[in-house]
Amino acid sequence: MIERNNLMNQIRKGIYTSPTSGLVHGYAQANLVVLPKKDAYDFLLFCQRNKQACPLLDVTDVGSPVPQMIGANADIRTDLPRYRVYRYGVLTEERTDITSLWEEDMVGFMIGCSFTFEDALIANEIPIRHQEENVNVPMYQTSIPCEGAGIFHGNVVVSMRPVPEEQAVRASLVTARFPSVHGAPIHIGNPAAIGITNIHKPDFGDQVTIKDGEVPVFWACGVTPQAVAMASKPALMITHAPGHMFITEIKNEQLGVL
Image (cartoon, rainbow, N blue to C red):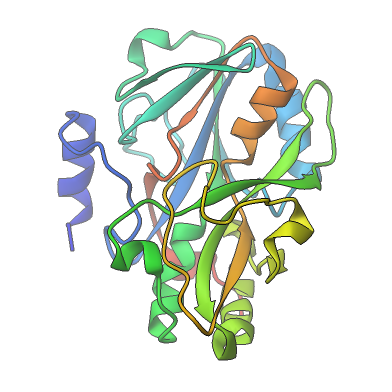
Protein backbone atom coordinates (compact mmCIF):
# COMPACT_ATOMS: atom_id res chain seq x y z
CA MET A 1 0.00 0.00 0.00
CA ILE A 2 1.45 3.39 -1.02
CA GLU A 3 1.67 6.12 1.61
CA ARG A 4 -0.54 9.07 0.66
CA ASN A 5 2.04 11.88 0.65
CA ASN A 6 4.45 9.75 -1.37
CA LEU A 7 1.76 8.93 -3.93
CA MET A 8 0.62 12.55 -4.20
CA ASN A 9 4.21 13.59 -4.82
CA GLN A 10 4.52 10.98 -7.58
CA ILE A 11 1.25 12.14 -9.16
CA ARG A 12 2.23 15.82 -9.01
CA LYS A 13 5.52 15.04 -10.77
CA GLY A 14 3.76 12.97 -13.44
CA ILE A 15 5.44 9.74 -12.31
CA TYR A 16 2.25 7.91 -11.32
CA THR A 17 -0.39 8.08 -14.06
CA SER A 18 -2.47 4.91 -13.49
CA PRO A 19 -5.89 4.22 -11.92
CA THR A 20 -6.20 4.74 -8.17
CA SER A 21 -8.57 1.99 -6.96
CA GLY A 22 -7.10 0.20 -3.95
CA LEU A 23 -4.37 2.77 -3.35
CA VAL A 24 -3.73 4.63 -0.08
CA HIS A 25 -5.79 2.61 2.38
CA GLY A 26 -8.36 4.63 4.28
CA TYR A 27 -8.43 7.88 2.29
CA ALA A 28 -11.48 9.01 0.32
CA GLN A 29 -11.19 9.61 -3.42
CA ALA A 30 -12.92 12.16 -5.64
CA ASN A 31 -13.86 12.78 -9.26
CA LEU A 32 -13.12 16.13 -10.87
CA VAL A 33 -14.98 18.55 -13.13
CA VAL A 34 -13.54 21.95 -14.08
CA LEU A 35 -15.66 24.56 -15.83
CA PRO A 36 -15.49 28.28 -16.58
CA LYS A 37 -17.51 30.45 -14.21
CA LYS A 38 -20.20 31.09 -16.83
CA ASP A 39 -21.21 27.40 -16.70
CA ALA A 40 -20.49 26.76 -13.02
CA TYR A 41 -23.90 27.72 -11.61
CA ASP A 42 -25.72 25.46 -14.05
CA PHE A 43 -23.42 22.58 -13.11
CA LEU A 44 -23.82 23.24 -9.39
CA LEU A 45 -27.58 23.04 -9.89
CA PHE A 46 -27.14 19.88 -11.95
CA CYS A 47 -25.24 18.26 -9.07
CA GLN A 48 -27.90 19.28 -6.56
CA ARG A 49 -30.58 17.67 -8.76
CA ASN A 50 -28.55 14.49 -9.32
CA LYS A 51 -27.02 13.83 -5.92
CA GLN A 52 -26.51 10.10 -6.32
CA ALA A 53 -24.55 10.44 -9.56
CA CYS A 54 -22.83 13.72 -8.63
CA PRO A 55 -22.50 14.00 -4.83
CA LEU A 56 -20.44 17.11 -4.18
CA LEU A 57 -17.58 16.92 -1.69
CA ASP A 58 -16.16 20.37 -2.43
CA VAL A 59 -16.29 23.31 -4.86
CA THR A 60 -13.31 25.61 -5.29
CA ASP A 61 -13.43 29.38 -5.19
CA VAL A 62 -13.45 30.98 -8.64
CA GLY A 63 -9.91 30.90 -10.00
CA SER A 64 -8.54 28.79 -7.15
CA PRO A 65 -7.14 25.29 -7.84
CA VAL A 66 -7.26 24.39 -4.13
CA PRO A 67 -10.13 22.21 -2.80
CA GLN A 68 -10.03 23.66 0.71
CA MET A 69 -12.45 21.23 2.36
CA ILE A 70 -10.88 17.98 1.16
CA GLY A 71 -7.31 18.90 0.19
CA ALA A 72 -6.05 22.20 1.57
CA ASN A 73 -2.50 21.40 0.45
CA ALA A 74 -3.50 20.20 -2.99
CA ASP A 75 -3.62 21.65 -6.50
CA ILE A 76 -6.24 20.13 -8.79
CA ARG A 77 -4.22 21.22 -11.85
CA THR A 78 -1.47 18.70 -11.07
CA ASP A 79 -2.68 16.31 -8.37
CA LEU A 80 -4.68 13.78 -10.40
CA PRO A 81 -2.92 11.02 -12.36
CA ARG A 82 -4.64 11.81 -15.65
CA TYR A 83 -7.13 14.35 -17.03
CA ARG A 84 -9.50 14.57 -19.99
CA VAL A 85 -10.39 17.70 -21.95
CA TYR A 86 -13.80 17.97 -23.62
CA ARG A 87 -14.46 20.80 -26.09
CA TYR A 88 -18.03 21.16 -27.38
CA GLY A 89 -18.72 17.59 -26.28
CA VAL A 90 -15.70 16.05 -28.00
CA LEU A 91 -12.83 14.44 -26.08
CA THR A 92 -9.90 16.34 -27.58
CA GLU A 93 -7.00 15.25 -25.42
CA GLU A 94 -5.79 13.43 -22.32
CA ARG A 95 -2.96 14.82 -20.24
CA THR A 96 -1.26 14.55 -16.82
CA ASP A 97 -1.23 18.28 -16.00
CA ILE A 98 -3.78 21.00 -16.79
CA THR A 99 -1.81 24.02 -15.54
CA SER A 100 -1.46 25.48 -19.03
CA LEU A 101 -5.24 25.25 -19.54
CA TRP A 102 -6.16 26.96 -16.28
CA GLU A 103 -7.90 30.32 -16.49
CA GLU A 104 -8.68 32.88 -13.79
CA ASP A 105 -12.43 32.22 -14.00
CA MET A 106 -12.32 28.44 -13.58
CA VAL A 107 -14.21 26.53 -10.88
CA GLY A 108 -13.39 22.99 -9.72
CA PHE A 109 -16.06 20.54 -8.59
CA MET A 110 -14.96 17.55 -6.48
CA ILE A 111 -17.48 14.71 -6.71
CA GLY A 112 -17.56 11.66 -4.45
CA CYS A 113 -16.09 8.44 -5.87
CA SER A 114 -17.17 4.85 -5.24
CA PHE A 115 -13.53 3.79 -4.78
CA THR A 116 -14.02 5.28 -1.30
CA PHE A 117 -16.35 2.50 -0.14
CA GLU A 118 -14.30 -0.35 -1.57
CA ASP A 119 -12.39 -0.73 1.71
CA ALA A 120 -15.74 -1.31 3.45
CA LEU A 121 -16.73 -3.93 0.85
CA ILE A 122 -13.43 -5.75 1.34
CA ALA A 123 -13.87 -5.62 5.12
CA ASN A 124 -17.16 -7.44 4.57
CA GLU A 125 -15.40 -10.07 2.42
CA ILE A 126 -17.03 -8.83 -0.77
CA PRO A 127 -14.57 -9.14 -3.68
CA ILE A 128 -13.42 -6.21 -5.80
CA ARG A 129 -12.81 -7.88 -9.15
CA HIS A 130 -11.04 -4.98 -10.90
CA GLN A 131 -8.51 -4.90 -8.07
CA GLU A 132 -8.04 -8.67 -8.25
CA GLU A 133 -7.44 -8.45 -12.01
CA ASN A 134 -5.39 -5.23 -11.78
CA VAL A 135 -7.54 -3.32 -14.26
CA ASN A 136 -9.71 -0.21 -14.21
CA VAL A 137 -13.28 -0.53 -12.95
CA PRO A 138 -15.81 -1.09 -15.79
CA MET A 139 -18.21 1.82 -16.37
CA TYR A 140 -21.24 2.01 -18.65
CA GLN A 141 -23.54 4.62 -20.11
CA THR A 142 -27.17 3.85 -19.23
CA SER A 143 -30.65 4.80 -20.37
CA ILE A 144 -31.37 6.39 -16.97
CA PRO A 145 -31.91 10.14 -17.54
CA CYS A 146 -30.42 12.77 -15.26
CA GLU A 147 -32.48 15.74 -14.13
CA GLY A 148 -31.45 18.58 -16.43
CA ALA A 149 -30.19 21.94 -15.18
CA GLY A 150 -29.43 24.92 -17.39
CA ILE A 151 -27.28 23.76 -20.28
CA PHE A 152 -26.56 20.36 -18.72
CA HIS A 153 -28.44 17.16 -19.55
CA GLY A 154 -27.67 13.52 -20.29
CA ASN A 155 -27.84 10.02 -18.84
CA VAL A 156 -26.32 8.42 -15.76
CA VAL A 157 -23.06 6.48 -15.99
CA VAL A 158 -22.63 3.49 -13.67
CA SER A 159 -19.69 1.51 -12.35
CA MET A 160 -20.09 -2.27 -12.08
CA ARG A 161 -18.71 -4.78 -9.59
CA PRO A 162 -19.62 -8.48 -9.83
CA VAL A 163 -20.84 -9.75 -6.46
CA PRO A 164 -21.76 -13.30 -5.38
CA GLU A 165 -25.55 -13.52 -5.42
CA GLU A 166 -25.74 -14.29 -1.72
CA GLN A 167 -23.74 -11.12 -0.92
CA ALA A 168 -25.68 -8.64 -3.09
CA VAL A 169 -27.87 -7.46 -0.23
CA ARG A 170 -24.83 -7.08 2.02
CA ALA A 171 -23.08 -5.01 -0.67
CA SER A 172 -26.13 -2.75 -0.85
CA LEU A 173 -26.25 -2.26 2.91
CA VAL A 174 -22.51 -1.62 3.21
CA THR A 175 -22.41 1.01 0.48
CA ALA A 176 -25.65 2.68 1.57
CA ARG A 177 -23.63 4.01 4.51
CA PHE A 178 -21.72 6.25 2.08
CA PRO A 179 -24.27 8.51 0.35
CA SER A 180 -21.65 11.19 -0.34
CA VAL A 181 -19.74 8.75 -2.58
CA HIS A 182 -22.79 7.40 -4.50
CA GLY A 183 -24.26 5.24 -1.74
CA ALA A 184 -26.31 2.13 -2.46
CA PRO A 185 -26.47 0.54 -5.93
CA ILE A 186 -28.98 1.93 -8.39
CA HIS A 187 -29.47 -1.44 -10.08
CA ILE A 188 -28.71 -5.12 -9.49
CA GLY A 189 -28.92 -7.77 -12.17
CA ASN A 190 -30.06 -7.57 -15.80
CA PRO A 191 -27.91 -4.93 -17.55
CA ALA A 192 -30.43 -4.51 -20.37
CA ALA A 193 -32.95 -3.12 -17.90
CA ILE A 194 -30.84 0.05 -17.65
CA GLY A 195 -29.85 0.21 -21.31
CA ILE A 196 -26.55 -1.70 -21.24
CA THR A 197 -26.50 -3.90 -24.33
CA ASN A 198 -23.14 -5.65 -23.81
CA ILE A 199 -21.80 -6.11 -20.29
CA HIS A 200 -18.50 -7.31 -21.77
CA LYS A 201 -17.83 -3.98 -23.51
CA PRO A 202 -17.75 -1.14 -20.97
CA ASP A 203 -17.89 2.42 -22.29
CA PHE A 204 -15.14 3.47 -19.87
CA GLY A 205 -12.58 1.41 -17.97
CA ASP A 206 -11.94 -2.29 -18.55
CA GLN A 207 -13.85 -5.55 -18.80
CA VAL A 208 -13.76 -7.80 -15.72
CA THR A 209 -14.67 -11.44 -15.20
CA ILE A 210 -18.19 -12.23 -13.99
CA LYS A 211 -18.04 -15.70 -12.47
CA ASP A 212 -20.80 -18.29 -12.20
CA GLY A 213 -23.02 -17.48 -9.25
CA GLU A 214 -22.24 -13.75 -9.40
CA VAL A 215 -24.58 -10.89 -10.25
CA PRO A 216 -23.54 -7.53 -11.73
CA VAL A 217 -24.14 -4.71 -9.27
CA PHE A 218 -24.28 -1.15 -10.59
CA TRP A 219 -23.52 2.06 -8.70
CA ALA A 220 -24.01 5.62 -9.96
CA CYS A 221 -20.65 6.94 -11.14
CA GLY A 222 -18.80 10.26 -11.13
CA VAL A 223 -18.02 9.77 -14.82
CA THR A 224 -21.63 10.87 -15.42
CA PRO A 225 -20.49 14.48 -16.08
CA GLN A 226 -18.36 13.23 -18.97
CA ALA A 227 -21.40 11.64 -20.62
CA VAL A 228 -23.24 14.88 -19.87
CA ALA A 229 -20.45 16.87 -21.53
CA MET A 230 -20.83 14.75 -24.66
CA ALA A 231 -24.61 15.30 -24.64
CA SER A 232 -24.65 18.98 -23.63
CA LYS A 233 -21.55 20.14 -25.52
CA PRO A 234 -20.26 22.96 -23.27
CA ALA A 235 -17.41 24.91 -24.83
CA LEU A 236 -14.96 23.43 -22.31
CA MET A 237 -15.11 20.82 -19.56
CA ILE A 238 -11.98 19.36 -17.95
CA THR A 239 -12.38 16.14 -15.96
CA HIS A 240 -10.37 13.34 -14.43
CA ALA A 241 -9.71 10.39 -16.74
CA PRO A 242 -12.08 7.60 -15.66
CA GLY A 243 -10.59 5.69 -12.73
CA HIS A 244 -7.80 8.25 -12.17
CA MET A 245 -8.98 10.02 -9.02
CA PHE A 246 -7.98 12.75 -6.63
CA ILE A 247 -6.88 11.32 -3.27
CA THR A 248 -8.42 13.55 -0.63
CA GLU A 249 -7.07 14.39 2.82
CA ILE A 250 -10.18 12.98 4.53
CA LYS A 251 -10.70 9.44 5.72
CA ASN A 252 -13.28 7.08 4.26
CA GLU A 253 -15.12 6.67 7.54
CA GLN A 254 -15.60 10.43 7.84
CA LEU A 255 -18.01 10.06 4.92
CA GLY A 256 -19.89 7.10 6.36
CA VAL A 257 -23.16 7.42 8.21
CA LEU A 258 -24.49 5.11 10.92
